[in-house]
Image (cartoon, rainbow, N blue to C red; front, side, top):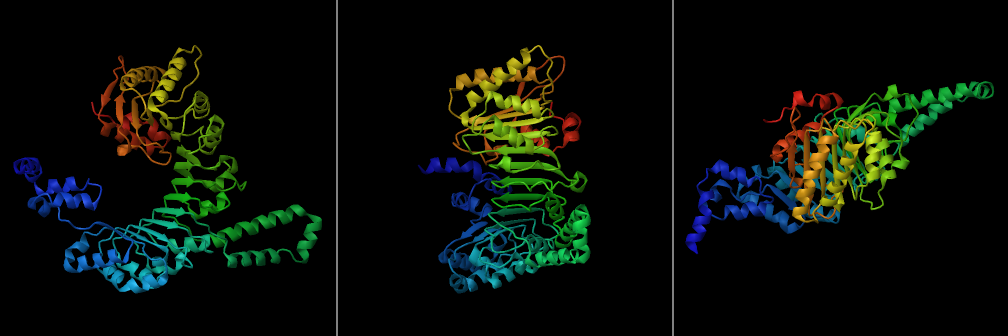
Length: 519
């Protein structure tokens, strides 16, 4: 038994320390790294059992971590991710404050921090945030705090992303912009279950502006020329927007809004987020159409993601959208709903599309080809339809498309990705895969890459399956005198996927020159 154990351990024990440390980086948790470290003394030296990701949800855990940092000061440099969310009332925070203060003082290398509502409501803990000069991500629930602005002066300028949740306590958009605009490195913001209001002071200012324009001359204008009053009111509204939204989050490039109403007009939205290129909406609507000139909205989105959004309650955004992503958890999702969602993504100029839906139907393909005629990348994922059924349907559609005598223009798809659930016979799958590869290469003259994956996850409407999210198989279709379809390593295909997800129209069309595949 002993010799067997030594034989099993010997390969890792013979590796250099840096190689073992690199392997340990891929282990999912500190517990797994601890088990590896306890396997042998040499491995313990290479991968010391130091905490890197700690969640403090009980007072006992807080005391334990504090004691460990005191006994082993070097551990503080290894603590990178910390969650402090244990208190149910302010008295709990006050009692544990000395221990938390001690941890905050020592954990100077912290990269990611999460605070619960009671923890963030503590002025002393908010003040200590300035200690984290290397902090890049902060997640806070400020439902118990009056405003984020109360802590803006203490937020470290190293922050690159912030996640706000349950903020519905009277905070205004103006206060949010004012507090976050002082962070020069902030590029990503997540708003979850938040509700921001119009500033009461701004409303009063607006009323004063309106009253100044409705004196005796205003009354006379009402009788003489109603249109002049309409124009005057519109000018006042524009001045009010410029006044209240004078500051903007000009460094912000990514916004995730979850159950959070956005500003009610595209003009206001564009003033707050002038440099936004990635927008993800989960169960919330786009701003309403304010009927302004499109020149006022000279904005381009690299990526628009709609997850369980009611397209019928939205107006198409007046922006150029290069890549769209549509996901739905509704089993009632049909071709008409898809068409409504596509409308919001401006399908006539769309370069790439991710479609993550329960099932795929032939009518949906018709809607895609008739409206999104410029697609270079299509990622189709059906989480309630098994992979075999999905690729069988697609192969049939592509075969029929190839046999059609009319010369209907098809989308210039270069990369096609298909995923579905894993309920099928392996032998049947290989046969249908052969048909999919053949008919897809014939139906799309510009097609160069096909990816296929199946997953045992029952529901994945909100999960990105790219990369290591699913066991992908990739094929390359070289174009020339002879079409030779061959399977390629997954890493090569994922490199192509990443390129297209970041590409605009010009970059997608210049794919061959910009991202040459390996021979």
